[in-house]
Image (cartoon, rainbow, N blue to C red):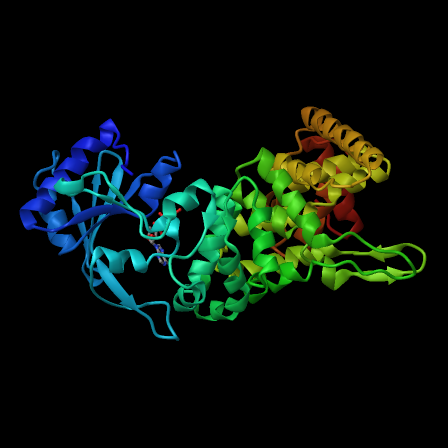
Length: 470
Ligand code: ATP
């Protein structure tokens, strides 16, 4: 079968062909680019393999391109990269790999195209397109990759156990591709995932998280997480998530399975938002349910304080997973901490002060918090679900009305610490904090209106009670 070369590819492919011919190197396009193009997906990363010196091929090609591109050479890997017309083209000599048991980094020697295809992770990633004059455009498919593209199957080219044991990152890649492309994992390949799961211990956390991020970016990450769970791989790097799974029954009373609930919430968020950190908040929103689970004769199962403990767990999990510990973590932490607030408002009287407090605490992340909360309504009971959604809409509407009136979001109380210190001639210290908090609380509770004069009058009164005079 032949690869349909698109007009925008023609010129660069022909230049690669001619340059490789001058050097007498057989040359091929391989890997993800070929796979994605055959799937009708756009790809910007083109991998070129030659039987020869990849860096030399890139250098010689670069002199023929206009404008002459900058060549980035990675000597240690024997590769070179050129950016041209929106493509990132990487050149490498065909190689043969052999592995040791304690590392996923192989020792490498020069090899043939066949060696190079053998070292690839999946049949669909082992397809090569010849760029040689005698069979230009022909697809070289030694492992049935074309058939597997058609049947939407992930399968390793060689023995799956060997493939996964050599480089266990491939196990995560199998699951990620299955999720991303909506493919199934062929039974023997799938079986090997469970058998070799403990090989995960030689992979760095950064690599694991890199794949997890790609799973999180798919439209339905629950598919990937279920595969990770069912194969036992999830437990090797994310035991807190695994602990969410299961239903305990006492006195005939059960609770929902928090793992599958979490995945449903995650998918719900993904259906309405591409914000990766909001997705992480969904994944972690109930993470502290297992350690806070209690059984009570009267009220059944409770998870009191799971939102607060969840907030405490977020930085620890981010640190272990090598996720950023900056404002993104703080954002996830905040959403986890607040995720019950809008719903709990529906149960009590929705007072203005409760709404004001929520506006203040959520600030600029209010919309995202509401998205998470709505996604969290997963009851199987239709009536109950409709009731929750109606209540939720009511809270939403109230939030908007009150924000319109009071402008509490991104709000700073009208009296600063500096004003307090100057007014009473006091140094920085506890008393300043107490007075500041008292003013903020009084405004949020609606005891005084949100303006300078009333707040100042309140301050003077409060300070007098504490023994400070103007
Ligand atoms: P994506 O860009 O979505 O990560 P990709 O398949 O293009 O997908 P790359 O990491 O760019 O992934 O790898 C390019 C090619 O290199 C793959 O298609 C595959 O043939 C090969 N490859 C990458 N990683 C591995 C691995 N760990 N083991 C074997 N082959 C691999």
